[in-house]
Length: 213
Image 1 (cartoon, rainbow, N blue to C red):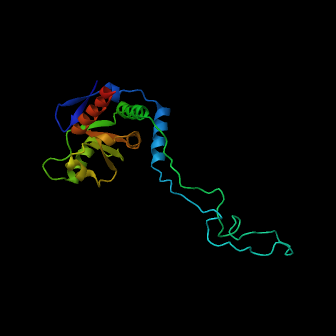
Image 2: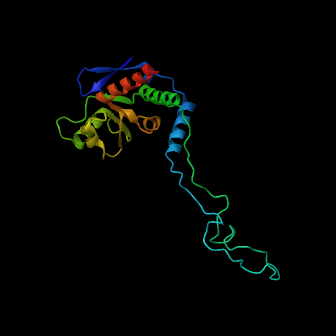
Image 3: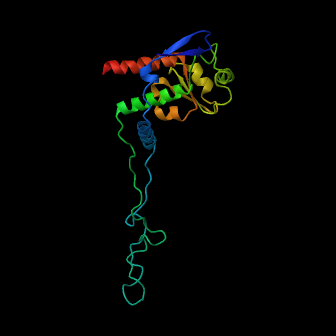
């Protein structure tokens, strides 16, 4: 277990399980999972028309013989302006099959790497009271991270409306629910900041999956 202090709660610490936050950092595996995640985000709707799909070209442009020119059957052949495209892209899926065990191992490796560099923090909360306040939430981040962090990933509980509403439009801050946490977003951020509620839910959810297996 690795103990980290909870920002905003004097003297309080939380334990980070070693199986999640002190896992092996397998760089090739992490790379493969990130590439697969980015590939799955591609729409794959690119499309071109062949010479049989473009409009026109039904009439032979000129007679076969006697003109001194090369014979042509259609003005919609690929070498003509306005003609079809040969071997062009067609709609396709870029999804790569990635087993859940690989995704889990990659995420744990990414979190472990961030923690080893002191870039995983836990806060008790971002806003006091019942109304969302972006100014207060950013003040908490500034106090915890200073001005060095440009990209911050905040992991908030799905039911924590105050945090979501306070930080959803903040520049440089990306908010995710604990069940949406993924390798790419962890690596794309300078720091990962958990709310205490989200960390508990994330750890319980991860351990619950292992028990189910």
